[in-house]
Amino acid sequence: MTAKKFQFKEDARKQLVKGIDIVAKTVGITLGPAGRNVVLDKGFGPPRVYSDGVSIAREIELPNPFQNMGAQLIQDAARQTNDIAGDGTTTSTVIAQALVHEGFKNVAAGANPMALKIGIQKAVKEINDQLSVLAKPIQGRDQMAQIASLSAHEEQMGNMIADVMDKIGQDGIVTIEEGKGTSDEVEYVEGMRVDRGYISPYLVTNQEAMKAEIDNPYILLTSEKISSANELVPVLEALSAKSKDIVIIAEDIEKEALATLVVNKLRGTMNCLAIKAPAFGDRRKAILEDLAILFGANLISKETGRGLESATIEDLGRARKAIASKEDTTFVEGAGDSKSIEARIQQIKLQAEDTTSDYDREKLNERAAKLSGGVAVINVGAMTEIELKERKQRMEDALAATKAASEEGIIAGGGATLIRAASDILKASTATGDELTGYKIVAHAVEEPLKLMVENAGLAGDVV
Image (cartoon, rainbow, N blue to C red; front, top):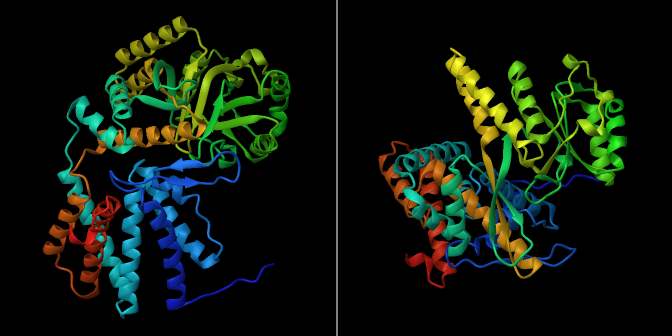
């Protein structure tokens, strides 16, 4: 066993800061309208060109273990921002770096770190509250296009995203795929999103986005709990002659059965995705029946006298694509009969009309909307593979930014609103001592994004 290394106090803080600075400096050059790209050597295949903070940050690994811990801390800040908001990862990295620098400087000068922490946390909450008040809803398609264009650094891309969002609505499903040609194209197909993601991260196929993506999968639906690998063996063996791609939706998949799927995935024997069926009780069963019709599958259930051991290829459904994150799964273009799908939608709508429960009516209407809702697929075009990867990443960032703006509203950009909000809460604060210093640390930190944007444009950030 390798012996652990230890560092304390100022020595430890210095090493952490070095790691944080390396990540923040590398990520920071992408910030703002004049931000640059970063080229990364992946170790295999062509290099990748990135312009978003989290994609760059996650690729950085430092040889010094103490510095690498600092890098991991700032990487986690970017990752959390990406998971929650989908954009703004570079800004959060720059602010986090400034908070660390100012915080450590004050601790070294004798400030109480716990009082500083309380002041920082209070200031951050008050700024967030101010931003929520100042945020304004998006006004129309043109404003949406401006937001998308700013994020993508490309007007054509921004207009395409705005057109798609305008057509399918704020809650519509949009997927970004690598196209076959040189130009961007949009297609609208049937699809559905369920509020359950992959059971195990070992089933992920896209490590950068932490998503499991399977093309043309077979889909097994069961309302039962899968406890042992033996229950899956017959259908997996039958499937192996036709395909290596399967999605399993079940009440639950317990350790032994899940381990079998993971091992098959890691060995490359089969590309598996396992998700728990959404909802509970009778509503779960009804949603599984909806999915069976959407995919053209037979639901395996003991209520109908069917066990998993009786499942055959003919019981499996199909879809053009399945994309799962840890929160949800999107299915694109199920193979079910369109007339059967429409009949199911009408049946659900009639149930909604007949029920006397407002809650049941809401859930029934939600099911009908999901079954009838389509999916917009944006196929990104490019001249080369390197350009394709880079443009796809920008399209994904712009889509996330536009969705976030649609949900939360917009504020004045360039970090100006952050600075104004920080100034307001600092003036109104009744904090004293080191807690007040915590407020001042936050007020200073939120100035850094604007300064860096100016520096990236070739001007002096300190004179702004």
